[in-house]
Length: 323
Ligand SMILES: NC(=O)c1ccc[n+]([C@@H]2O[C@H](COP(=O)([O-])OP(=O)(O)OC[C@H]3O[C@@H](n4cnc5c(N)ncnc54)[C@H](OP(=O)(O)O)[C@@H]3O)[C@@H](O)[C@H]2O)c1
Image (cartoon, rainbow, N blue to C red; front, side):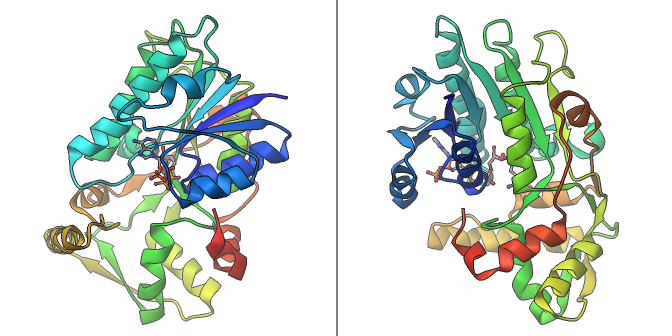
């Protein structure tokens, strides 16, 4: 039995990954901040080490007996760039340093993001993307000690997805969806089940990152389809049994103004809106696509589920209870 340490197990991808790992007969340890979801993890038989990647609490204990580590924990949105850096770069550095201190460091699989590569692979354009890239760099700095694989998925969809679908549903029901800027955005997507299969495959195979080479051991991941924004909106409408919504181009300065307002409103409610200025920085760029060729070759990855599959599962009555 392999003991897998999962960070971010209380999140969207983490919930699915824990179930997939347990289904394969692995033992799972989760490094997690206290919350209701920790209780649910314990009920599944997960060994939970309560801790925090920002303070470092629990990290040493969590890594102690892990045979492999899947690092999903991240701030995907935050009130400030400092918060993104603290969790994504510094938290990752803290984890990898703890792994490097083991006599024989276990294999690390890091869930990065296409945002770390940036549009067309030309470098990050948002604070989130830059902080995820810095996390990769922190891992690469320890490549001589910790064998690590980095996966860079596009937009992840499926049951429990907390950002895109909840934002799109009311707009599609209204029949009117904004499109940021003039260009029709192109996106890579991946079903969360396929992402989890790739993450678990990477615990066993695939090239590991090298200190002197930014490409080896880094695997972009998608379903291999180029999704256009109007097509994404139309697919949601079909899944809801609604008519295809009108997609209305909104000038980027207007998007920025809306995002600023949403952030101000969020401050009063102590929440961070899915539409924020950092996300608008990403929306300025139309090309967020990648292929999965390297993952197919080295990880044996084949996407098996479509966006329509993800929508069906997410909209099923039991889908809302996940992760
Ligand atoms: N969702 C996507 O479309 C997508 C696309 C590309 C890449 N990714 C990457 O996939 C990974 C998982 O994303 P997700 O969508 O599952 O995000 P999520 O639902 O927001 O989950 C984030 C997880 O990180 C944990 N976390 C945050 N700060 C932490 C800290 N200081 N110490 C310990 N744990 C902390 C959260 O714990 P709490 O429950 O305590 O907050 C939660 O379990 C991330 O690395 C993300 O960058 C996601």
